Image: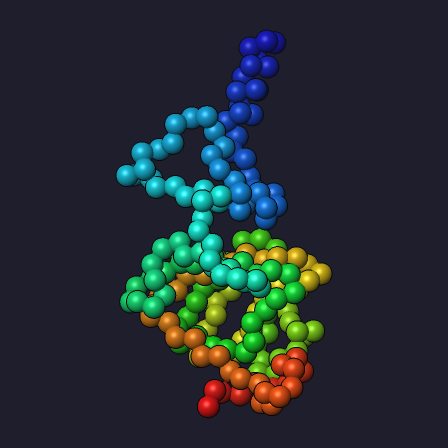
Length: 177
């Protein structure tokens, strides 16, 4: 019986810890007392060590590559609650996986945050090149984190409000002058 308990305890200690919340995902470090794999074979970057950049509203963390140069790139995007982009498009396809939270999207030049569609964690989305969209996170559902993979160089074209003297909500957006 004692051997069985020891075996069960050993098994529990060997089980990796999974991030159950976005905070855990972003702050998690090594989960085992075992030595790390040889970093020249398997380089690891724990959630707590990912370098986020940006300001209030959204942040990004480049994991590999450079979207402004030829080749594949991967970036994490974190949308804060109640923040989103306005209508825009990208010159190349981008592949998004919703890592955590609910990501809200629209494919219209009419900017109305009330008409965004909810995309839950675990969903894969293709952002087709040259197609208008806007996205973010709603206040009532909390933050969202996306993993974006694409091939650079990518150019983003941001549309502008038809009437710049008015608030952007509820109006159509047009190509920049």
